Image 1 (spheres, rainbow, N blue to C red):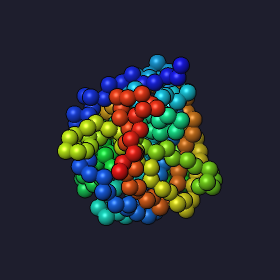
Image 2 (image 1 turned 135 degrees about the vertical axis):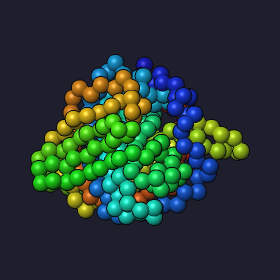
Image 3 (image 1 turned 180 degrees about the vertical axis):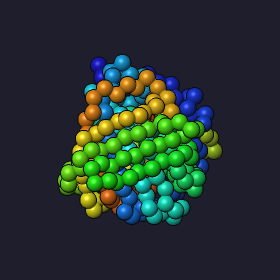
Length: 250
């Protein structure tokens, strides 16, 4: 039998963002800089990090992403996300239950528009000749410190970013429901690099993935790309089995 998640998200749903409608317009984020690392995690947490609507990846993984957007309708911002690798049915997805962003305006817009469960914090992304480095600090505590070492140029066609499933409360037919919102931005790449992943600090509890223990680095990439934020097309009911959980918007 395929493995499915066992996590109850009701406690996180109580503080998840509210998405009042699905009329969010597509937005352009030109020249975004994206640092992404993937790590395998201990299989003890393979199903406990995911709700019943999702299958775990095998091996189980976490995807660490820090993105700096220099230009947007709500100004420049940098966001840090840690997503649990998963599959919705047969399709690869990344479960996002918490993240951090350094702009209050961006937090408000991303929460209301696409259900990104973000809070304001200090997040930074720096490119040096020998590494690309990112950090996130919240409440006086370093919650993430990660790097790509010895970058080497590659084609942007070699990169693949998972669509995100964002935990949110949506309003449908006048009632509030807990759903995972699928956010699958489009990327047009200007440059890309790969290198050695290095994770110097990670607080799983801060990202609401307590129990996740990283044990093997898989990959690290860095890209400069134009990002187009999508309209909302699909929702996932976290309480239903994978083959019955997907709902099409409209």
